[in-house]
Amino acid sequence: MTDPFWLTVAVTLLACALGITGVQLYASGARRHAALVARLDDTAAPGTGGRRRAFRGIDRRVRRTALGRGLELRIAATGRDITPGEFTVALAVTVVVLWTAGQAALSPFFGPICGLLGIWAALGYLNWQRQKRIEKFINQLPELSRILANATQAGLALRMALSLAADELESPAGDELEKVAQQLAVGTSLDDALGELAERLPSRELVVLVTTLVLANRAGGTVVSSLRNLTETLEERKETRREVRTQLSQVSMTAYSVPVIGIGSLFLIDNMQPGALDRMTGSGIGQAAVVAAFALYAVGFVVIRRFSKIDV
Image 1 (cartoon, rainbow, N blue to C red):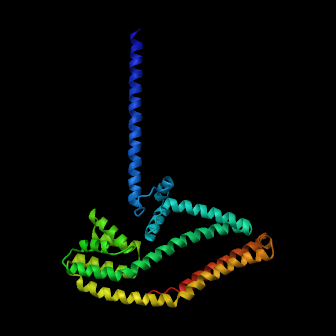
Image 2 (tube, helix red, strand yellow; image 1 turned 180 degrees about the vertical axis):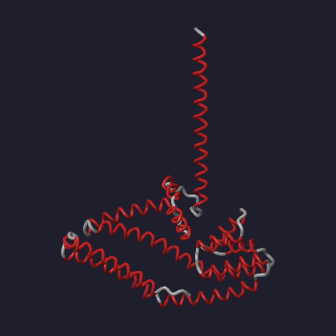
Image 3 (spheres, helix red, strand yellow; image 1 turned 90 degrees about the horizontal axis):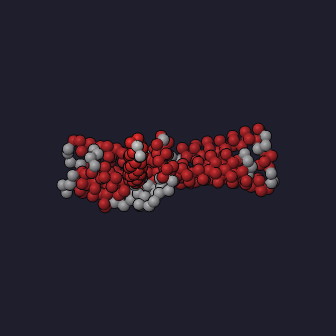
């Protein structure tokens, strides 16, 4: 045995030991990274009830994009127990199914149109859920203002009054105020926390309430009388909004029924004369006519919805 031999053995053993240590450190770091990402995902998407979310890799990729961040805010405003990644996968599956169904039931030309309708329907569902939650939150604003007035009159600070209101009110007001209380607990200013609340659930009533609370917090004066007057005003606006919504319900139904009748007529034509849609969309003129018809239906829907929208 020569000295170079033992030197080679020693270097080899040292390299093996360093390699094993490096693999162990890498595995430990990977586990910590995965745990940290899981905690961040739980923080970014509250309200999931501790369930194990699917498509985590897709969810992380979606959140990194500008569209993904906007989608995350929109989903958060709906209060639904779903992540941006899950919504993206569900949207993709819906588009594929509608695309295939449109090609099979009507004609190949209608496949992309049905796919676009699927995207429109999914985004419309989010907007509907968001608006529904905003309306429910607006209906809770008089009670919220009353609780804040009573709490501040009893000598509680505004931060404590918001925490008390979060415990007293039901969802969605209770959930949203709980988020505000958590932000205040970690050092977020009252202006920023209430400003984010107004951005999540935009409405004139909430903006008035937030402005009143922010100005009172900055001035340091009492807010009891302002909140009392605001409570009465919110009650009156609540009744007015209910009456306006009832009067315009028929117009709103018309906006949805017109496109449904148009799409239903396509199925009726195809059943009465099988292959008629294939012949109609087989030429450029027919395809242009179909696209123009769908565009006119979309314009009619938007115009009717605009007429039925009255800001109170």
